[in-house]
Image 1 (tube, rainbow, N blue to C red):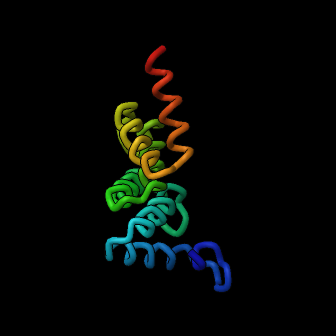
Image 2 (cartoon, rainbow, N blue to C red):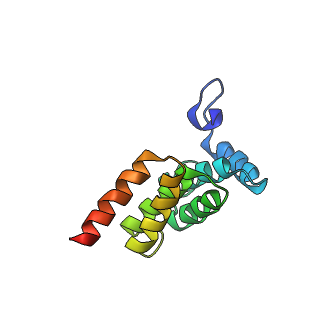
Image 3 (cartoon, rainbow, N blue to C red):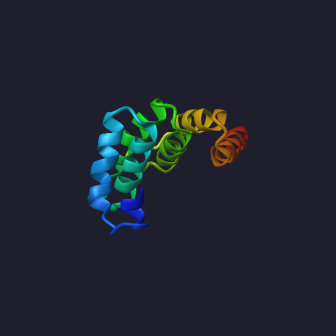
Length: 116
């Protein structure tokens, strides 16, 4: 994260992406989430929300709540994946079950909209 933010070292988002990729390959859900964020935002890599979704999914499957939330947002907005309220709710629910408050709020909003 220091390479991405430039804290204590020269900022180098491309190198950060390489390290997050290595971290993810070692099974680290946080590394996969952070790599997904870089793709989502186009920082250090070419922006590609389909790639972002893939890394978020991998991170979420490793138990990373932030990755599950981010994937839910992509499904909600139809960015990088086909828009799906059902999938958005599923990923928000998984993140909320791990204590992610924003995901719980998103889930509540979607559930309310589906009842209307």
